Structures are given as structure tokens and as C-alpha cells.
Length: 315
Picture 1 (tube, helix red, strand yellow):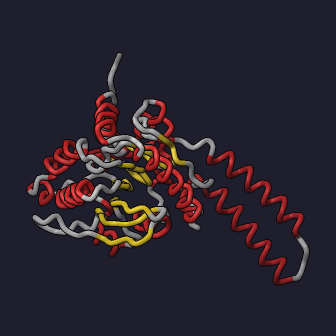
Picture 2 (tube, rainbow, N blue to C red):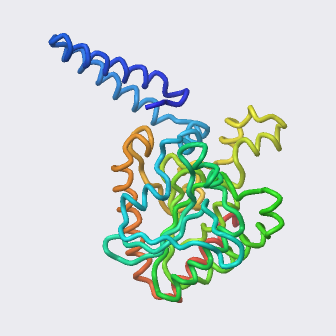
Picture 3 (cartoon, rainbow, N blue to C red):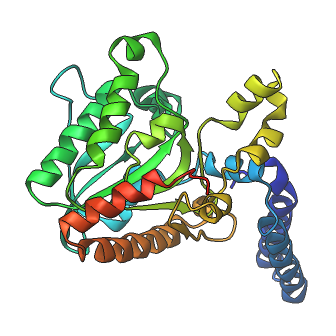
């Protein structure tokens, strides 16, 4: 597995251990004691590295190209997925997935941003940056959820809404603002999880929920560290400093009452054990879905409105 810059010592040690195992197997030589010693050293190195990550390092993990995306989680923890296409106005935005599914045999609506694994797919998915038609599709599907009394599960993973001229001409800001207003009144339980990047209005456009959770190494921010660095210091290389200032990590967000829960990841990040991550995420979603479904609709909407009104309040 390709490692990030700060993971190089870990990757090198993992390679050394694998080389020793291969050598032992080829030469029929018992070097298990040396392998065991190195494996113990590797575990210590991992614990030391991943328990002391900076905000910028967490941003890098959140963007890891092998990290599970929305369709990966749908495939791992849900069944009977049927995708819904189009906003009935302009087009189908492939950067934002919506559809019917089941979790624990319970019917739900699921939606989330979708990135690509290679250049071709990233162009198709617009790198997970939704257009206004994506947010309009999401709202259309949320209204279907309300009509059929189905809870909504949301996966957020976007650097931000697409800022191109066409998107602005078709009402990007209006589409997001409309979603913010309407999601406050969708009378079914909504559980949202930031699984990677949670960038600005692009994330918030499908982020109004009764429970907002963030994966341990994901981030949620009003702007990307690079964008913040460009504005404050006129220099993109200041992104690590900007990441610290923005308080965008799951731990910072929970401390400030912006999110409800941190979802733990396997050591090193979700990409190191996607199946385990899927199971952990499923447990989190199931718990929050059960708790929110127990509330009557009037109380549900009242608490959702209050939750977002108090964010940033002083005194």
C-alpha cells in the first residue's frame, strides 16, 4: 500500500517484514524471532505515529485515494440499492449519489458524494464536487423519503460544491441555500456522516441532520486548508498552519459541539481495513437511526432546528 509522506517509516518497515517472510519461505530458514521483533516494533511505531497526528496529516488521510467512498459503504453495509437519477430540471449529477436501499433489512433513502478512483472516473464524478442539479436531485429524493416515511442516511465526502461558471449560472448558491431551509423541515430521521472531506457549503448542502458524525480522520470545515492559506497568507504552502487554525478535525468539532459523534477508524485510517471500517460505520448508523426514530416528528424537527441554531452561539 502506498503511504503518505509521514507514513514512510511505517511503509518501509512493513516492506522489510514482508521481504523477511518471503526470504524465510524461499530459503526454508526459521527467522520467526526476528520477524516477531520487527512486528512488535511496527506496532509501536504505528501507535506513536497515529496517536499524534497533526490536523494537516488528518486532512491527508481524509483525502487518501484508497479510502472507501459512498458507493463502497453502500455495497458493504446496505442491500437492495436502487439509484435514482436526475433533478427533473437539468441533468443527473454523478458527483452525488441518491437512491433507495436497506440497512438491517430496514428501508431507507441513502445519498452521498462520490469521488473517482482514477482520472477517467474522477472526471465523470467531477472529483466529488456537486453541481446545483446534484443538490436539487438530493432535495427531490429527500421529499420522496418524507412522502414514504423513510429515514435518510447521508455520506459526505467533498472538497466543496463545484464553483464553475455553469454551476453559478444554474444557481449553485440558491440550490444549497434551498436545501438548508428545506432539510430543517423534512419530517423523517436524518443521520449524516462525514466519511472523508467535508468542505464548506458543498458538505452542508446535504448536511442538515439530526445526528452529524465524523470519521476519526475525516474533516469538516468552512474552507479547505489550501483556500484558507491563500486568503490569509497569500501562500498555499501555509496549508498545514491553516489546518490547525481552522479546527477542522473530528476532535475539535466534537469539543465545540458542532458534531454529535466521532466514529473510530482502524489504525492508520479507513483505507487500511475497509471491511472493518464498514462494520464500525454500520453500527454507528444503526445506533443513531434507532435513537432518532424513537422521537415523534414534532420533537425531531424541534431538536434538529435547535441543534443548528446554537452552533457558534456565544454566552
